[in-house]
Image (tube, rainbow, N blue to C red):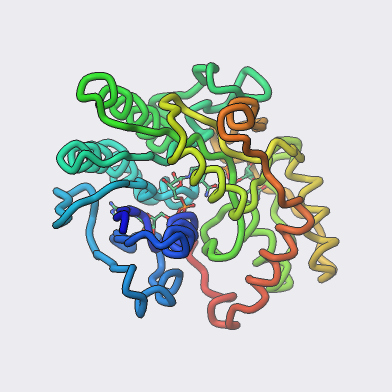
Length: 319
Ligand code: NAD
Ligand code: UDP
C-alpha cells in the first residue's frame, strides 16, 4: 500500500484530499496542529485502518516512521482574516514548515506537492493570470505575509528539485469553495451565506467591482490528484476561469438563499486584488483537466452544507 502524508489534514482542502486518497486505498497520514482546522472534518476517517492522525505543528521537526511515498503540504492559514491574525505563524508555516517537509521528502525519497496560491500573482497587472506572470506583490503589506511566504515556498521547492533532484510538484490554487469551509473564516462565500442564514445584510467590500473566479472543491481535488501523478515540475494553475464581480456574486447568493437581504458596502481591505482569473491552458494541456462543476451547482451544495449546521455554529463569531 502506498503511504501519503497530508499536512493541513483537518482543514478545508486537506480533509477532502484525505477522503480522496483513503478512497483510492492509500495509507493516509493526516497531520495538523488545528490552528484553523477542525477535527470534525476528518473524524469519519478515524475508524479506518488506512488512516492515522498526527497532531503536530509542521514548523517543528517532522518525523514519520516507516516508508513514505508522497507528501501533500497543505498546512497554512488560507483566509485573509486568519493570516492577518497570525502573521508570523503564516510566514513560518510556508517557510520553515516547507523546509521541514522538503527535508522529510528527501530523506524518504518521496514525491512532494506543495499548495501554492494565486496570491503569488498579488494584485495582478496581467489578466487572466498564466504561470509565466511573475506577479505584483508588496513584501511589506499586511497581506504580504501570506503572499511572500508562498513565493518563498515555491523557490525553496524548486531549489530542492534542482539541487537535490527531489520529485516536486507545485499547485497554484485559485479561490476554492465547498462544504467544510469555516462559516466564520471571513472568506467571501461563507461570509455571504452565513449572513443570509443569520438574516443579516451581505457585506460587499469596496464597490464590489473586484473579481474572483470560484472553483468547487471536487474539481480542485481532481486537479491536485492529476498533478501529483503527472511528471510536470513547474507550477500549474488549478482554478475555475469563470470570473464574476463580487457585487454580482452577492446578488447570486441573495437569489440562492432567498432570505430577503440587501447589500451593504464596507471599506475594501488593504491590497485586496482587483481581479483574479486563472489561465488554465497548462492544466488543460498537461493534466487534461478542467473544472466540471458550475457555480450554480457548487453553490447549491455549499449552501445545503451550511444550512445543516447547528444554530450555535451559525451564530459563533470569530471576528
Ligand atoms: P484551512 O485553514 O481550512 O486549512 C489549513 C489547515 O492547516 C488547518 O487545518 C490548520 O489547522 C493547518 N495548519 C496551519 N498551520 C499548521 C502548522 N504549522 N502545522 C500543522 N498544521 C497547520 O485552509 P484551506 O482553505 O484548506 O487551505 C489549505 C491550503 O491550500 C493552504 O496551504 C492554502 O494556502 C492553500 N490554498 C487554499 C485556497 C482556497 O481557496 N481555499 C486558495 C489558494 C491556496
Ligand atoms: N469580500 C466581501 N465581503 C466579505 C468578504 C470578502 O466583499 O464579507 C470580498 C473581498 O474583499 C475580496 C473577495 O470578496 O475582494 C474575495 O475575498 P476572500 O477573502 O474570499 O478571498 P481572497 O481575497 O483571498 O481572494
